[in-house]
Length: 286
Image (tube, rainbow, N blue to C red; front, side, top):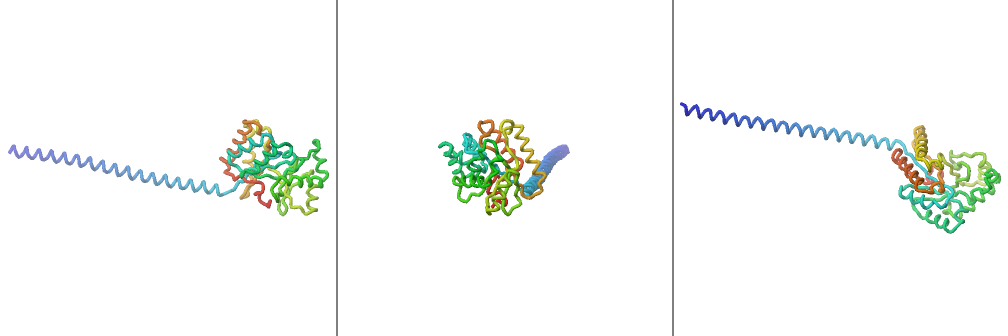
């Protein structure tokens, strides 16, 4: 009797022990399954969010196209090589509007001009041979349109064959034949009439924004210039937005000014995601 009871008690204890461990195994299995399931759901949710965000970002990028034209006047100059090296580091297309009298001023300037022409990131255009050297009397220069045209023609010997894009000295004027992009101030009006009379297809390339000595010296002015451009872009409803920025070689004489330019380019890249283009890529110019 005692033996049977003892045996039954032992069996009961063994059964309870087995049941206890089985219960623990069930709990562990259920918890593991729950964690795995929850993890999978979280991964799926994260994947959906990522895809959605990427899609929205891509849609925004495809919504508009911003084109920036960095144009440098009055070279070649002592600072042109340092400027060129900085633009190469930033990997941006740039347009140089050169002056023939500067090219012929010294062997050094001539060699600088050759280096610029040979670099695949840069293209050169016409800024006249003399740059209106009239002792500051710019109106006198434009008073005789035939002479201005001859000055433009004289400078073509330093440019690629067929180059017909000019920036006029001391005046912001646009002239694209068969295009709506045409603006002339008082200085250029006589010249434009003369070019029309001889059926010239010469294109005059103006600008929308100007980098001045202030931007070369003060980073706060660089920010101000960027926000001016940004504000214009917000107001522009066109699918494609084109902005020409006028700069001058001589404004980049030191490391500080070059750093300011690199900072400006980084602002454009980060916030606008633009394409940097040459002057001859401007819509309607060809």
